[in-house]
Length: 266
Ligand SMILES: Nc1ncnc2c1ncn2[C@@H]1O[C@H](COP(=O)(O)OP(=O)(O)OP(=O)(O)O)[C@@H](O)[C@H]1O
Image (tube, helix red, strand yellow):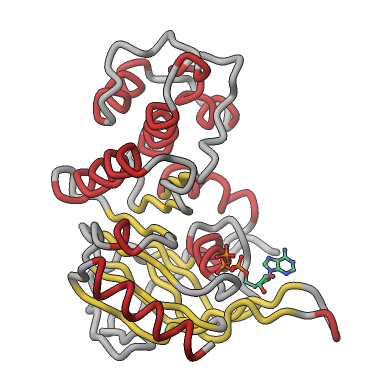
C-alpha cells in the first residue's frame, strides 16, 4: 500500500453497534470493520461491520462464542491484521491507511500486545526480553525504562533472571512489561490469563486494572472467563462477527448470564 498522509479523525461523537454514545475522546476505535479470511467459496466473514470506540483510561473485555471474531477484532485494532473494509484509528491517526513500514513504527510506540502464551525468548534474560522489540526496531535500549517497566509489574530486581526461572504469572508480568515499556496508548491482551491458574490469573487482572486506574492506561482484553471480564469497565459481546450486546460495570454473574443466553441463540 502506498504511504499516505496521516488522516484526522472526524470530530463527531460515535455510537457502537449496541447504541452507546462513546464521545470524541478516544484511544482507539474501529469504524464499520469487516474482515474476510480466504476467498471465494472458502471465505469466512470473521467481522461483519464492527464499530466500537475505547475511551482513554478504560478497561474493556471482549467476549463471545468461539469463532465470533474476538481475536480478529483485537488483531485489527492492534494493527496486526488489515481489515477488508472499514477503518481503525489510534487517537486521530487512521491506522488502516498507513504503509506497512509506518504502521510497524507506530505500532511499536502506540500499542502493546500481550498473548496467552507469554511469547518470551527463553535464552534471554528478563531485561533482554523487555528490550527485544525496541532492539529489533533498531533502537538503543533505555535501561531506566526497562527497570521502570519491570517495577510497574512487580518484578523489580528480576532483570537478570531467565524466563525459565520464573513462575507462569511472573512470565506473563514480563510480557506485560515488554508491552508497556514504550508507554503505549492502548494495551491489547488476548486471553492473558488463559494459561494461568485462577489465583495467578487474578494477580494479572489486578495488574491490568491498576494499569488503567493508577497509570491512566487503556486496556482491551479478549477473554472467555466471566470472572476476568468482571475486572473490566465494560464488556462487548460478539457473535458471528458483530457486536450484539454491551454491559457497563458488569459483574461476573451478569456476564455469565448474557453469555449463556448468547450460547442459546447460537
Ligand atoms: N487466518 C485465518 N484463515 C481463515 N479463517 C480464519 C483465520 N483466522 C480466523 N478465521 C476464522 O474467522 C472466524 C473468527 O475467528 P477468531 O479467531 O477471530 O474468533 P474468536 O472469537 O477469537 O474464536 P476463539 O474464541 O475460538 O479464539 C472463525 O470462523 C475462524 O475460523
